Image (cartoon, rainbow, N blue to C red):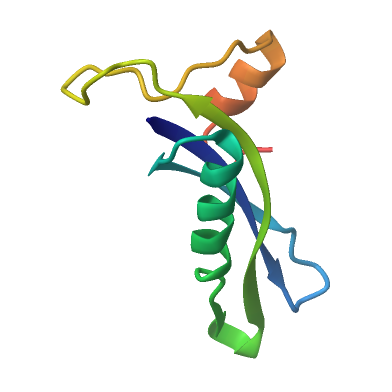
Length: 104
């Protein structure tokens, strides 16, 4: 069975005046149970936590924060148009998603 798994990562900057940057990542993972899929997703996530230096010498550390949700994919085959993830949103959530990155 296939699942889509939402993972949350955060980039923390060493500069005190820098806000954290969040990333939502959606993975396609195969497994028999949600707990198996969650274990697989966490194993992949912890392997992808890079750190690096940016201009000015500040450092950035990406870290895996959590599995946000696991969504079973009901389709028997994956093909063009298969729904991989869906959720209900409040007006405020939609407005946040539609706001261009960098706008306050």
